[in-house]
Amino acid sequence: MPPIALPHDAKAGPTKPEVRAVVRSKLALEDDDHFAEVGSCTGAVTIEAAQRAGRVTAVERKASRLETTERNLAANEATVQADVELRNAEAPDGLPADADALFLGGSRNFEAVLDHAVETEVDRIVMNVSRLEVAGRATEAFRERDLLEEVVQFQVSHGYELAGATSFDSDNPVYMLVGSATPDSDADGDEDGTTVAADGCGGEPQ
Image 1 (cartoon, rainbow, N blue to C red):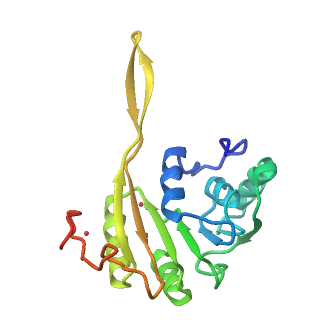
Image 2 (image 1 turned 120 degrees about the vertical axis):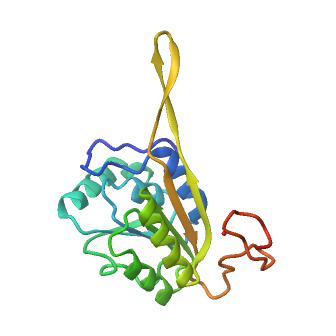
């Protein structure tokens, strides 16, 4: 897929392309999936999901940001294959009851959103967090609901020219929580049921 166009911006800014690439990998969307997003903002994740999934429901509590999502979605109309519905609501209100995959781009009301995911048995859940304290609370919330499959922490740096050479600017670290609410998922473990330790070692844990 070619890079998406984001001609219209919002104050919060888009999820960075490198982060979106990891989100795509973890969600593993297919053309018959119903994808739901909490906090669509610029629409960057919504648009990429709409290039892969069959249906997309994007929930955004701020009307101005939802308008930005809509305008950026229109700018990528040629590459979008999904049936997309944009909802101006504060999650978990507005979330569908039949989503296969769910992305939380923000932490507002995340516990209520996770409860909804459990109730509706969402198969793939990804949550991105940029603040350490929130990441800790979110990890515990995933664990308490038996959702947690893995926590990934990563940081991206971009090169720039400095005195005829290349130096780097670092983006803020991202904590990515990945999980599932389907009954047959193996949260907190690997494929054979082995528990994963907090340090990532087998046999004992965005």
